[in-house]
Length: 170
Image (cartoon, rainbow, N blue to C red; front, side):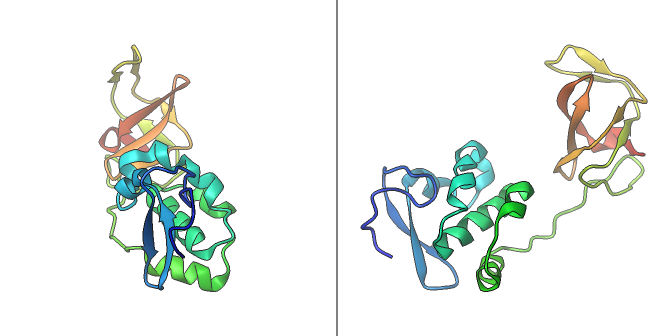
């Protein structure tokens, strides 16, 4: 692959094009300066990576591998589930992923919380910026794990982030 392309393989931008090596194979893709600035830490600019919903369908294995790795780092499981990768391409994609040991999210009792669980709020919590208090005993269904300390869910029809130390798994 050479820089004979006129747009980024990931987002379609044409500014500051450069070659990006897709390890461990000796294959490259062309990326723009915007993609290059956040490709190692994609969570720093999540909005930019919405472009992956298009580039993940590329016929080039190196682009597929890069999109798969970025979607994995971003936690976009719904898009990953839609992708089809040949077994050898999937193996290549997984080779480049770091397997960091992530601490599980636990509720106030130490019970591990998982995506889609239902939890109960254990004390009244003032929701900043929303103008209401999430009352003790309120059930939050179908939670989304944000980090080891926080979950996202709907309370009173508003999507908010709650600290897991104020929750109890149902």
